[in-house]
Every structure is written in C-alpha cells, then in structure tokens.
Amino acid sequence: MSPISTRSRSASLPKGCSLLAQLQIGQATPVFGTQKDARVLVLCGRDEPENKGPSFEQIYAQMNEERVSLMARRYLRDLRRDAIVDYR
Image 1 (cartoon, rainbow, N blue to C red):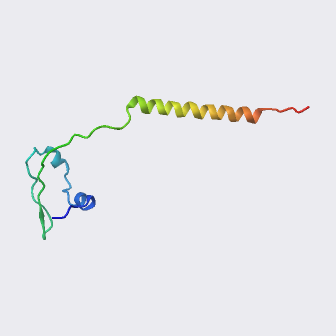
Image 2: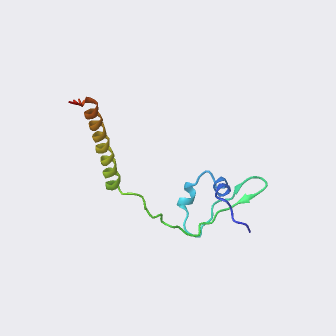
Image 3: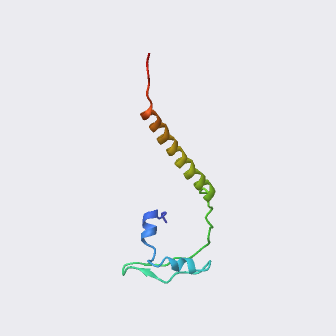
C-alpha cells in the first residue's frame, strides 16, 4: 500500500470534517466516496498540537517596537530635511 499524498488525502475527506472532531478514538465515519469507490475513515488517535507560535506579549512587543522604530525614522528624516548646513 503506497502512502497517500496530502493533496489526495485532503481531497478525499468528507465535506463535514467536523464529523471527525466528534468521533471517539476507534470509531469510523459513515461510508463516503463515489459510485466507483467507497471510503471510510477510522480515528486511531489524536495528537494535541503544540503551540510553538509567539505569545501575545511577544507579538505586542514586536508591534510596538516596529511602531517606535518607524516614528524614529520619520523624526530623523524630518530633522535631516529641515537641517540647514552653513559652511564658512
């Protein structure tokens, strides 16, 4: 049996994927598919996804840092634009 690619696996899932969320471990979905083939999914287990993304505080700090940096660049740009250099 060859491994199923991600594309064909997602294409073969029933439209009501919420049905999978309701299944208990070891339960099967109702039969679905075309007239030529029939498919059934059995829930073998669940892996809870690990949230490895940045926390709210990290995102908030980064956004504030970008905002302050942008304001500083604008301020320096305006200072350079308004500066008068006098050579003697």
